[in-house]
Length: 269
Image (cartoon, rainbow, N blue to C red; front, side, top):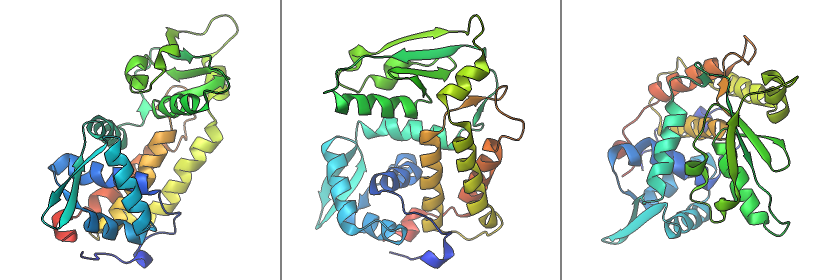
């Protein structure tokens, strides 16, 4: 393992979860270059980000069991690549992270509504549905009712969830005294979303001009940006304030990701 940067060269941060870090690492390199990474190499890459060896091993085993990763023996080493279930997730995540615009420019005024009714005992299914809807850009309008701007493919979004047949979806436009702005502000916490972007800008702006190829720094900025894109919907440019910080945050991410780029084959040995 080549330690191309020390933790002191990273901004102050709350370490990512093992799953987020692994998904970011595989999305950055494995999905793009069709690589296999050793267990030892993955452990050493994640360790400076605060991810323990035990957490890495358990997460790899769990993700492999679920089909997100695939593994095989190579001599005395176990190596991992992307499994059948993991590839579409990583490809979609890559698009979300590197999308050229975090705002919806050509919005036609339509909203996609999703609603479901589940018994209290179906807590696990409810959590899965909510997680999928949040990843898809939906906000909760009220209990069991979620909404997102634009016309979205809800079937694809929830297709991997057992029990998704309970979901109903339709598209609509506001009627009567209901306005787009009301829907937006009731379904999404704009202040919290804006604060997340601003904190990202503050933390990472100092590294925009620091052209230091660094696997750990690149992995950390990718894990944080991945988490932001996971919980942040693509909102219509016409509805957000003129000083909305999303574009600035994305520009900062794009530049830090570029200047820290490093060949993983030279960093993991």
